[in-house]
Image (spheres, rainbow, N blue to C red):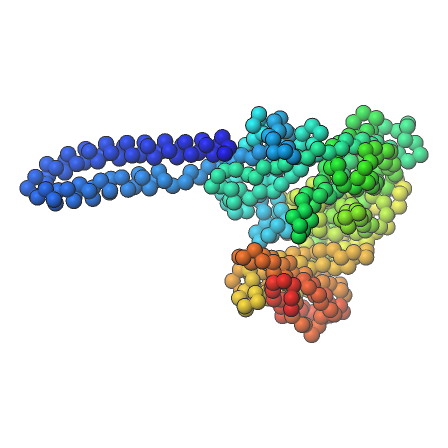
Length: 490
């Protein structure tokens, strides 16, 4: 039992004791006055009235005392592999507002970031009073690390732990120390890089419950130090995908297996800087919109995890944007289709994202700049309905539209089904000849996973579980309907 929980119990007991004392005193004073007024009535009548008075005097304050304390302070605990508490562990806390109906599909915006350490009992505290108005949409991310242990993180929804005020413990595990260096190809000993950054990605075995093998994702961004070297504690049992960059150089990629402790020299090369302007359908600049560059090459880990290099930027007051250097084939699109490899992945103050046809570029490794112009496209509307297997509407289900660009399927718009009738409408650029609609499944009240199955549509090119695609269709498309069913069975 945490100290905070003990304090809450003690506080509740103190409130109850104080209420009973005040209520008893009030009853005695009330009884004395009542006795004088009821001298002419029989003893049994006076006794009954006193009983009712006693209940009435104590009922309201006693009820107030028994109401649970709505405290906005929470505790968590960091433990080792044997369950022992870890003191002085480094804690990074990020507070998010979850997008309505996201269902774990994504976090809408980062509200605040905090840093703290654990006390001698391995506990940390976080106060969420300033975010209490958000209620159900609040999500807390906790990243924890310590000497010899690699950083692990968990996401918690405070509403699920308000009764005790305790987040589940995070277990840290001993890892291996990885070292490496970033350099410039062909001249690594002479050129000193500034503001070098290294991003590490991997999957570590979490547990095997006999039926399912669970993996824990590892993501860590670190900066290089003297001589452009980096050092980090990483999981002991997994291979890693490494992305490295520095000012003026394109992102370099590197992989190491689960036994390596030295990444060696990761060589950087010059790339092409992409900048441009975003305009609306009338030709005017569009400020405050998110633009993303995605490299088309995919990287696979031994566990079949896919990694892709992304950068994101926001247009300024004149609609202009700029990305750091990249090389190879890439796709420019408006909006975020995934977290950025380097730089911000959340833009909470961005405006509505316009429909824009993605642009595919082939960037060389020369030290140059390419300028492009993006313009908002005319929309084509796709609409339909999502129902449960019993015919009831399925509200707040995620519906996405994606297109093919640069050989990749890229999400360009996203919406939720209506709470009342399960209807939805989504837009795609009208000039595109191919597009795909995807409906995400969800769990029912029993915890059973429901899968989205599209109904046959006369204008569809093809369909599968969760997806239906269209090719060479004209105008809007209606009645694209889905049914959510369990066990992935039609």
